[in-house]
Length: 315
View 1 (tube, one colour):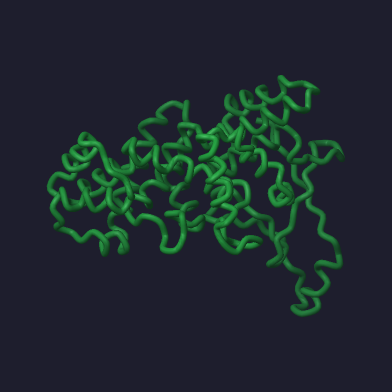
View 2: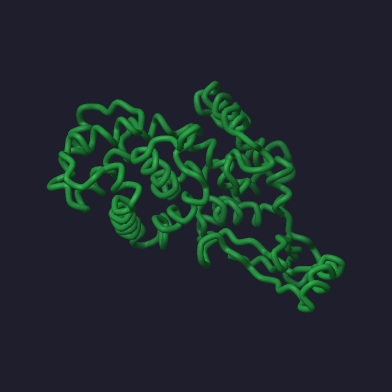
């Protein structure tokens, strides 16, 4: 993968007030939300700044309109990793085949970005984290969503750690991550408080489906009860995962998760964080996506987010 070189210029007047107060110039640092995992922000002191990205050996700026940087950013925002070479080339070629046809370029940029939410990698990691929270706790009180970004991001990074779909051994790595994550999840204090140890299998499973707000098929109900076993940590985790992976729940929550990820991925915030103050924007896009039966193209949802001032201002 071609590396993108970053050069950073900080205006002198930005440093002056802080220097006058502390007699020590602020430091330039890279801060990640979760350890050293992507995405990261560049801070000058405590102020977030934007880097000036230049093509290697040139003074040519790199912008979000550049295909390679745009594709790389989809990996960072939705999969929390840099691209693998084969995927990076594939998605660039998908856009570049349009040549100078701008309408074609715009349409393919939208489809490429949406493909990251629809990908096996995200559906089996980020969307699974969403569904685990939905099954365990339902929606957060007084909101239409089951999880906030500050919880979602580190959990998704945990379950996706080391997973690159298509790479050798990725299925085994993903399965190992799922097992470890769900077993840890059912031992969290909030989960144990809601589902005490010693619950009967049918009571435990019915409580999860009820909290999720769905009526399972007979097969889904029995599958979750069967893997509960003796009700130890392994069984409780397997049963929760069975509920979260049920087709009934996946279908019910798909559009809701798709809209929520527009905020988590593109805007790096919760739907009711500033500049919003409630979930009216989220509700608008969910209503529109449902109106078009999940067709994000006809709903112009992804297009609206990737062309928004808020998204483009990140870069």
